[in-house]
Length: 108
Image (cartoon, rainbow, N blue to C red; front, side, top):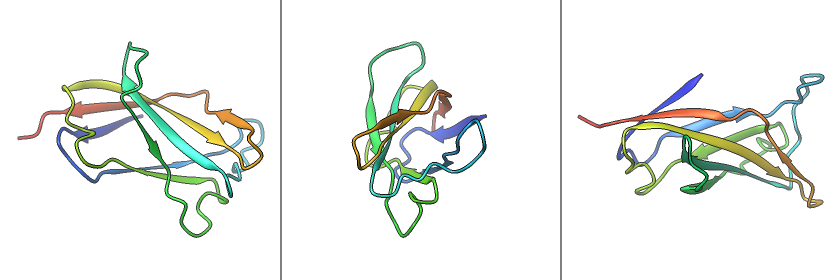
């Protein structure tokens, strides 16, 4: 799946449901922090990091919602990738193996 974004937009959101690959159960992130690291495909430099909203029980239910803001999407048209990382309240870090793929297109 490719997430499609438009250059210059200041409020698109991405919703991810974090589940275990072995049994499909949700990853309880309650009390922890979930971030999305964003970079251009083929590079190693992280352009920015988004922190998931912690509203109600969404993180405990394995739901991470990330919002782009400000000038974050003032990027060249092309492919980008994201990595989701969970830091539990105990300090344990889990990183999703699968990268998210984004395509940023020019605005009209």
